[in-house]
Image 1 (cartoon, rainbow, N blue to C red):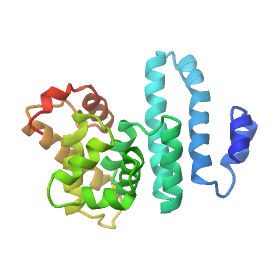
Image 2 (cartoon, rainbow, N blue to C red):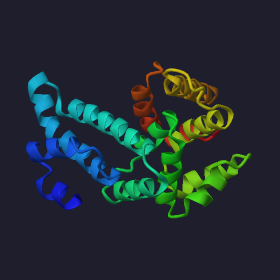
Image 3 (cartoon, one colour):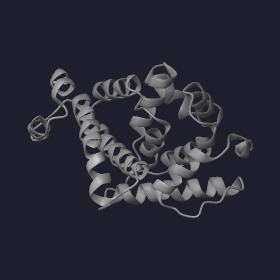
Image 4 (tube, rainbow, N blue to C red):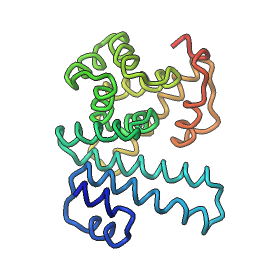
Length: 217
């Protein structure tokens, strides 16, 4: 299936046939999401007269959300293969790692940090779930993630330790909302104010913060 996607992934007939299969390996599905997104980018910009940069941003956001959905439906072995494939192809970005955490996908965050740090998931779990802050910081730094995102990661991990899904309707959305509220508070305490609590806005702005504004973190 990987070979078919590599050789014929740009063909709509192949994309449609793959998409309608009852189940795809998660690594194949992630590649397919990427290829479909790329093929749509030009069409999106052309039809709606969007700047190429905006079309790219929209596609990346959509792709990240789709990939995280795939990861939540995967077992641990599949997830390990997924993050490895994404790192090899340059798609295991700080943005998607932080997005997964903000959406409550702790498994993806753990697997991604382990992949980037080149250590086992078990070791990463031990570090990031340590009651002190040093373990999380050590794992974060070893993975080479941007310093500007550490306050968000720390705040999100605090929520993850304190909160579980409530099992009700839209519980993932409520969980994510608590994550974002805590993140805003964390940055506010450091003197960094954001103009919106929209996740896409936050992810963009956090990536633009200079590291030296967060020395207190």
